[in-house]
Image (cartoon, rainbow, N blue to C red; front, side, top):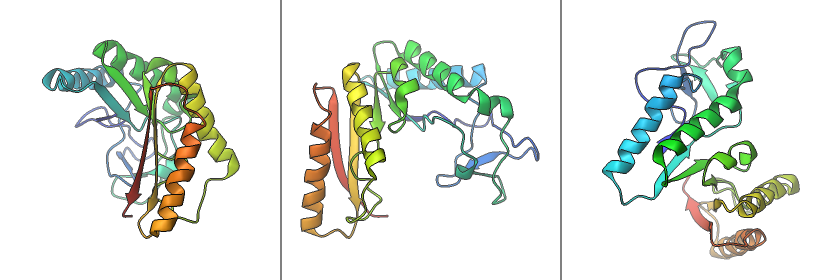
Length: 214
């Protein structure tokens, strides 16, 4: 595991109006500058060092491989105010992310690079070995009576089909918030697994269904 957007005590993205560091609302990590080549190289070095130290692992899961910068996900350090990102970083975000993925993949060689990027990995999947979809079928943070809309459901299914068609790994994760009855849980497992089977045509796929205590 390695988060693609945060590292340590350098390469921070700063709010262009206040100079404050930018923090993720839910997880509290600082946003780092993926446009900085030194950041990308440092991240790739950390990944290969981890894999060299633990050779039993097949590769790395890169978390938070996002398609865009969304101010609503972040706040300025020490405040509740949303940040103002550098315009150049926002404009070229996907190109910088591709560059980061490519560098990590070239550094780890035959080891796997799996992206936690949801269903929107069209622009990224070509540069990695597979993807994680945390919201496939039924998100684990939703209750048993709430379901994805048809468009969203199809987006996830088509993402799986795209991965399968290009011989990529696809880790489909679904679940239900704690509190579901045994009958509700059993129905959701069947529903999610049937959705999964609609996209599976190879052995490079994995389904996971679990219960979330949130």
